[in-house]
Length: 145
Image 1 (cartoon, rainbow, N blue to C red):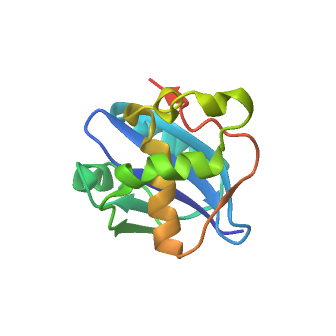
Image 2: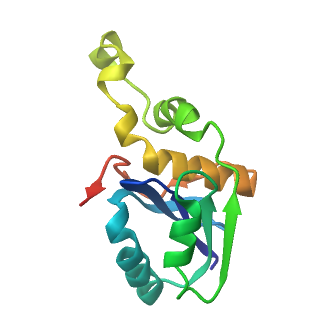
């Protein structure tokens, strides 16, 4: 198994995705307060066989990379340009609107503050040059504070 963690870094919050590359599946996707990220990643590493961590090269990426010094495998910094912009469209690919909800404006269903985990997914998909599917019905808006 080749599990990876992808992080969309930010000053106050980060998007995080746990995925299996060989299966092209996302197992976990959350938005987490930046100060909780280090402990959360430690716990994941203790319970999962993580082969690498991919971090977007934007805001606070250097600081987050330094906080993850304990990870003994490869940490990669990867381009994250326009991921937040692209995240809204990707959200509706993953969670299409159906039924009468189709009459309601899309913006009601997703707000920019909830797109960090999808931005992390886009970083992963760009890095791997392939699309991932969801292992289960994951809520990409889940917050850990």
